[in-house]
Image 1 (cartoon, rainbow over the protein chains, first blue to last red):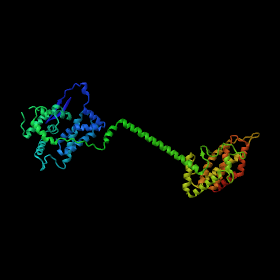
Image 2 (tube, each protein chain N blue to C red; image 1 turned 180 degrees about the horizontal axis):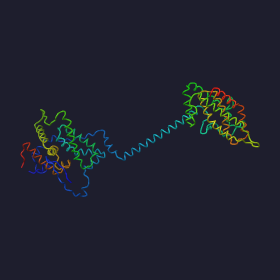
Image 3 (tube, chains in turn brown, orange; image 1 turned 90 degrees about the vertical axis):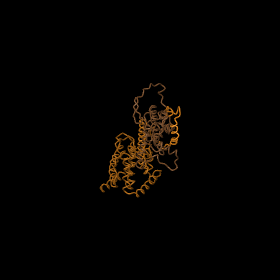
Image 4 (cartoon, rainbow over the protein chains, first blue to last red; image 1 turned 90 degrees about the horizontal axis):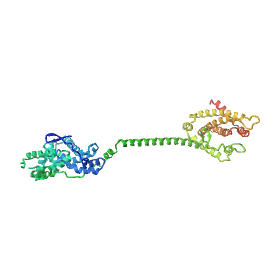
Length: 198
Length: 297
């Protein structure tokens, strides 16, 4: 089985080793069970999925749209997922499917707001503290990085997710996430003028 | 330096990563409850929609339509029955059923009175002054119907009423038009009745026998009786009282003939003949027929 992943500017085609499934491994994951329950109309299960995946969706959106718009868009993404949950064939692919909805929603947001005005995070107010201004500047730099780096870095640095957690939520392989984190951090250090620790 | 801290937060802390984490944590997602829409019909529909539910819904729909159709049909037939029953009750006259023999009138197969050899009720109707209970009621109904008929226009009386009577009983539609048509039909009816009564009057027993064979007259009397009833109701509704009197006089005679035994005794036949003679029914019919032919009916 081959899996297509995006790392930095490169498109990697990674051959996945065919796992020898032990009987215990054929058991569906808790997330899959939650997806199945939500598909049957269990709103509690969908709420649990929201708890598990809201940080991922928030990070994906934050990498693309202004920060003050993200919370509303997170709600939109989950509502859209709720409406279209019956179209998801593989319950185990919920994370990747939800991430794609979030990316599409971000594109849709830009398509609609382009006619009015371009929104950026660089809007500074007189009351903005130095730390806030620095944070906005760092976020802006991260947003200018290649897509695979900026998503992974935001999930790690902003949302506080660990590498394995990012891999499990987004559906990417751990190796890909690790590579993206390493290269993205290196690029960010260069842009911020930090010297890499030896 | 290992990037373990960057990977999963383990190992030696990377100060740059830690500083960026602290700096950017202000943008971190603040968990908020998911605001689900009030209308979650998409859940219900997605669960409900399946071939099985669609088939079940179709079956239920067909069943409901069938029940409605059946109910409407029953309602329609009841309405028709009620109309005819109302029409029958309005005249308080014998009910025409099937072969035209009265089913609600006095039992025609009941023992005949000793004096006249006819059903008791018929004898009561025949008595002048109405000692029995039937005659006053009939008179009252006649007066009421006459008053009602006076208030009606020719268009709204005859045609719908007669059409209802004839359609409801499956009879031929012989009178749906004007008074002339009604009277013409009555004239033809009287001619047939004359033929019957003359035939009956001339019937005689063979030598040495005490019974007569009048099966032909009986059958003909049955047919004329049903027509007589309908005609009488028609003229009653139109308020044509002279004609109604003739028909009312004729009707007991027809009933008596129709209810005679297959081979009645000479006495029974003679009693009817006497009444015919007393009422001069044949002459009355003859006069009416002559008037009708003169009027070009």
